[in-house]
Image (spheres, rainbow, N blue to C red):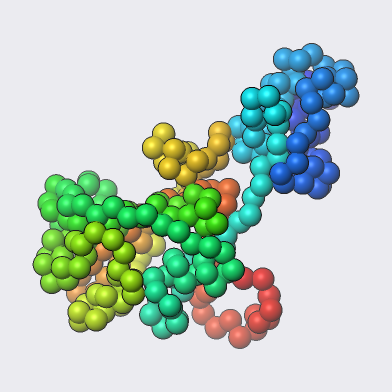
Length: 257
């Protein structure tokens, strides 16, 4: 005998059918009336089951349109190649990677003088509240919000590389620009975490209920000190990161990246 509450039985059955492809991404689920009859359940029970799937990010609801299976066209980012100058790029790493994947990139910029936040300052080895330049990008893939990226540069670096403080894109990418100024990023330290989005993150990334964000913090270093700290916030349902480490000659060239 199934001891699960009835609404969870409804959610479990629909979840299995979504996972098995009975309801592909972009399709609508049966109406609440149809589900009531199928599961011999009250309207509230059916709605509670559907609400559980909404909170998990599997389906979306629209007033008057019912429930639809969320489309998940995942973008795969190779984090070990991202901003690596040994790999060919036709501009900055974001535009190159998205274009090479056959997708369409678009981004907006904001550049401002900012005080170093308490979580960024130790990474840059500067005092909390000291002057930094923040370059903030809101990025899209095929017009769908993909990520936000906040990069903090210490004041001493901006003095040596003034284009960092100019509004708009740096066409060749900031890493290449800094290298042209004799400031080479020779290494980086990555930190990866997940959590639920803040209201502002949910607004910018247009995430639905139950969709977490992936936080990727990369601190870049020259030979003797940190030169920038970048916090990229990804939609958790539309992104996958991978790394290439060591000798991968045994990996098939046509294997999925």
